[in-house]
Amino acid sequence: MKKYALFSILLFALTACVSASKSTTQLQEWAPVRINGQLQVKGRFMCNEKGDTISLRGVSFGWHNLWPRFYNAETVKWLKNEWKCSVLRAAMGAYNGVEDGYLVNPEFALKTVEKVIKASIEEDIYVIIDWHAHEFYPDLAKEFFGSMARKYGKHPHVIYEIFNEPTHDHFWPEIKAYAEEVIAEIRKYDPDNIIVVGTPSWDQHVDIAAQDPIKGYHNIMYSLHYYAASPMHQEPLRARAQKAIDLGLPLFVTESSGCEHTGNGKLDIPEWTKWVKFLEANRISWVSWSISNKNETCSMILPRGSYEGDWDTDVIKPTGIQTREYIRFYNTTDRNYENLR
Ligand code: MG
Image (cartoon, rainbow, N blue to C red; front, side, top):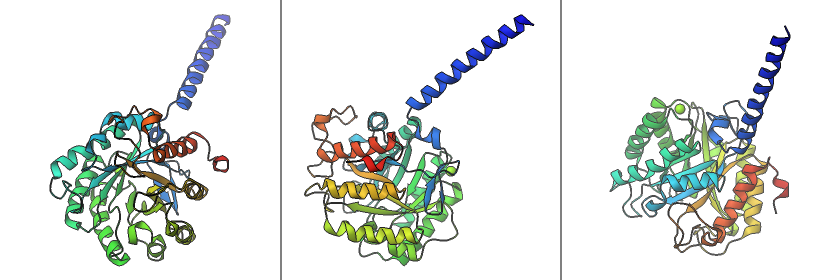
């Protein structure tokens, strides 16, 4: 009996050690998809597989056709491990106004964007497949998203964003009709991954979408974009966001920055922080624009910075430094938004 008792004690001690070391590893490991699994939308909230409300925070790559060199596994790895992003956004340029995009060079577009999708799945991070357009191309969009859903719909990592920014020329009824067509195509192959729908006037009229949301589909969210240094993007835009929240619309900020709406001009950190606190208080996921090295305020990396991550602070521009600080702060603390300076 004694022998068995001793064996049991040893076995228990061994098991306890294994589970202690396992839980330490889990704490240290940044594994957003392993922790949260298949996302779902409940009411106006993004939830994880268990049904707990969560927020994703991360960055968007710039247009794939303008900054293709950042689209690689090393940059994805760096943004996950060093910046602590839980989501990345691959911006598939599908617009005639910017050269060499999906409309004229689909092979290169797919090859480039899929590098980020595959690396994100490999790295256990969520990834938004963004149709970066300012015009409707319903047939092309259906073909593209149908193929993405067939290929990647089984992975919980993937989120579809089917029309980056409708402009002031696009009204909600036509955006909604376009969205219903593309959603139906995605849902033929992928019944559950989240689909983000654009809203009128560069994703600023979420209040209009909130009055007439899409019905008949689960796991649909609506995009809101802000650029905090422009006065029209401050209280007036937050008031529209609040209206949409009050009407129960699930929002996702798939683009944002602290500069002006042009992507340039001054950086207004107090106004930016006000926005981030508003989003955190309302449990809204957000993404900052963009990983690129253009000579403009919202572009996060200097031209001498590497295309493959590994960025010291001195090659990250002020917008990138502030973005990294917000992401690290919220993704590594427990919603401690009151303490953000
Ligand atoms: Mg799926």
